[in-house]
Length: 185
Image (cartoon, rainbow, N blue to C red; front, side, top):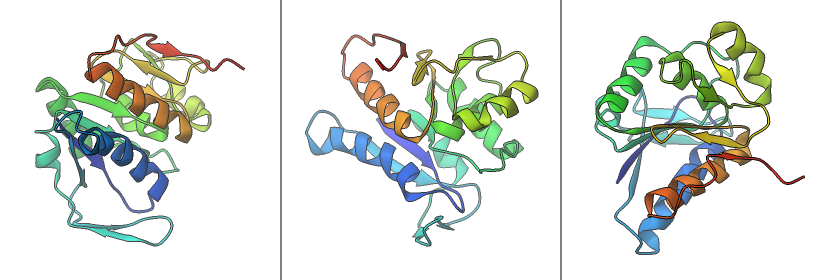
């Protein structure tokens, strides 16, 4: 399974590292041939919010051929996804890829129209923004992640870890229950 993870200027290393660590562990443990790669929209090098430079990024064309596309976060200002990013997500989805929006990464997934009329979750700070921009969206603030089988979204940053582990569990033939997971507290 090839998994593309979107990288952009000012993304945090935590957001980039969570899906990479979880999905790469599948290969490290000999459980499957999973491979992650970072991609961006035109930039071959990005600078993280911590000041690290990350280079040798694949382009959007490579992401369109992935088995899963992960939007690990998004810009803090909640800007709408560009046409190129939306097209990448819809093209990958139409080709059968699972689309994952972790934390604020739900914003471009919703902007791409992949959750129209369905439930989604995102970071609490983006709920009002998404509700205004997409009134047809059923936002659920009581769950850590929601998996529709083809599109998965998660709440805050740490919830992204739960969502990634859920994806691994469901892809490695474990029964994917529950699809909406609530914390026990």
